[in-house]
Length: 318
Image (cartoon, rainbow, N blue to C red):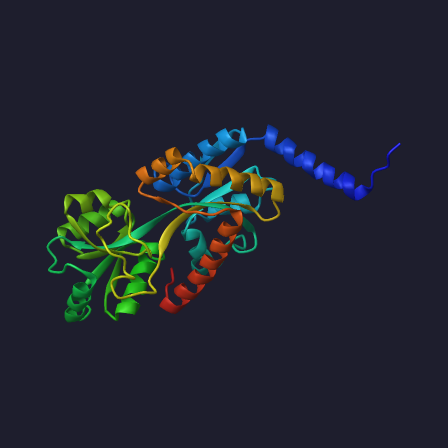
């Protein structure tokens, strides 16, 4: 009769537990935004891919509140068994430095599973502003001696951080006007009430195409496939400028590696599927390459980057 040691039996138990959970329980893919937006749409696309490739039911849940930290808190406090996954965006990296009383540790309590997609932000002006590139805008702003305002989507947002970084790098004196959403912000920029703005390129793509907003530069290192003729800020004289909106999936730290790997593999496969790529691009986003290890390295680096940037730019919600 064979005698099995405890370590072997324990390992077998973990494997059986993992496979049992994966086979029987649905995956809850939770995000902190409202339904109908880019985050929700990308989460649903990923959920469909996981459902097919993992042979699992995937339930996408919207839990908005507390600057997306409510959804993050639910996943951070859940059992690390892979049943609860956070689908989040770039605000995840800024929150710990803007909301110091978060009920979780952003760096230690999550394990990145996969980066899915990214979108750049874009610097735009009202169509009638007498500038056609970033250099001309900077010259114009300097002549205004601080009388020009820049529209951003809420204080502490990636749009605000982009505008603050531009202010510092360009050496211009501007004031920030926060808005609750892109629609109201775009309306005021189109009318000329606020002549300059930073916004997500997806949110105002239709106004750019219509010619009512003039795009000067994007915040990513590469040009956007949506508007390939629009240069980057890095090309426009600010080589270190790079801020993108990213979207990815995270689980609670301590989730078994087999589960992390299976989710990662399913996402990598999806990201090489032309049909999935086309659906992501229809949302104005671009595929982010890499597996779970690449995703973890990216998120940890982005956390450090946001910590330095928010501190050095003096950004605060108070």
